[in-house]
Image (tube, rainbow, N blue to C red):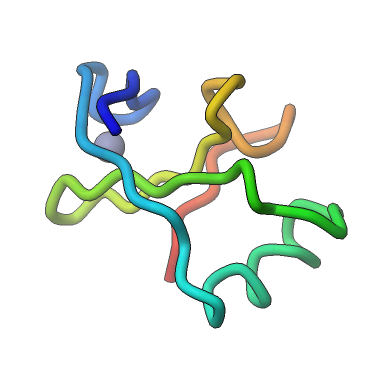
Length: 65
Ligand SMILES: [Zn+2]
Protein backbone atom coordinates (compact mmCIF):
# COMPACT_ATOMS: atom_id res chain seq x y z
CA UNK A 1 0.00 0.00 0.00
CA UNK A 2 1.17 3.49 -0.77
CA UNK A 3 1.83 5.45 2.41
CA UNK A 4 3.98 8.41 3.31
CA UNK A 5 7.43 7.35 4.51
CA UNK A 6 8.90 9.57 7.20
CA UNK A 7 12.50 8.80 6.27
CA UNK A 8 12.10 8.70 2.45
CA UNK A 9 10.00 11.88 2.61
CA UNK A 10 7.74 10.54 -0.12
CA UNK A 11 4.90 8.14 -0.73
CA UNK A 12 6.30 4.64 -0.96
CA UNK A 13 5.00 1.12 -1.24
CA UNK A 14 4.72 -0.54 2.18
CA UNK A 15 4.35 -4.19 3.01
CA UNK A 16 3.16 -6.19 5.99
CA UNK A 17 5.94 -7.53 8.24
CA UNK A 18 6.59 -11.27 8.05
CA UNK A 19 5.76 -13.45 11.07
CA UNK A 20 9.41 -13.32 12.08
CA UNK A 21 9.58 -9.55 11.70
CA UNK A 22 6.43 -9.13 13.75
CA UNK A 23 7.92 -11.21 16.56
CA UNK A 24 11.05 -9.05 16.52
CA UNK A 25 9.01 -5.87 16.35
CA UNK A 26 6.70 -6.46 19.33
CA UNK A 27 9.28 -5.89 22.10
CA UNK A 28 10.84 -2.99 20.20
CA UNK A 29 7.60 -1.05 20.02
CA UNK A 30 6.31 -2.51 23.29
CA UNK A 31 3.01 -3.66 21.80
CA UNK A 32 1.36 -7.06 21.86
CA UNK A 33 -0.26 -6.55 18.50
CA UNK A 34 1.70 -5.16 15.56
CA UNK A 35 -0.74 -6.21 12.87
CA UNK A 36 -1.26 -2.57 11.92
CA UNK A 37 2.46 -2.05 11.29
CA UNK A 38 3.88 -1.83 7.78
CA UNK A 39 7.39 -1.58 6.36
CA UNK A 40 8.65 0.72 3.61
CA UNK A 41 9.86 -1.36 0.67
CA UNK A 42 12.18 1.31 -0.72
CA UNK A 43 15.66 -0.27 -1.05
CA UNK A 44 17.79 0.59 1.96
CA UNK A 45 14.90 2.09 3.91
CA UNK A 46 12.80 -0.47 5.80
CA UNK A 47 11.25 2.20 8.00
CA UNK A 48 8.40 0.91 10.12
CA UNK A 49 5.17 2.83 10.53
CA UNK A 50 1.59 1.96 11.29
CA UNK A 51 -1.23 2.34 8.82
CA UNK A 52 -2.49 5.31 10.81
CA UNK A 53 0.64 6.98 12.29
CA UNK A 54 3.85 8.02 10.46
CA UNK A 55 6.09 6.22 12.97
CA UNK A 56 5.83 3.01 14.99
CA UNK A 57 6.80 4.80 18.21
CA UNK A 58 6.73 8.36 19.48
CA UNK A 59 10.47 8.45 20.09
CA UNK A 60 12.46 7.88 16.97
CA UNK A 61 12.40 5.85 13.81
CA UNK A 62 12.45 2.10 13.73
CA UNK A 63 13.75 0.11 10.82
CA UNK A 64 13.05 -3.52 10.17
CA UNK A 65 16.19 -5.57 10.38
ZN1 LIG B 1 11.07 4.68 3.30
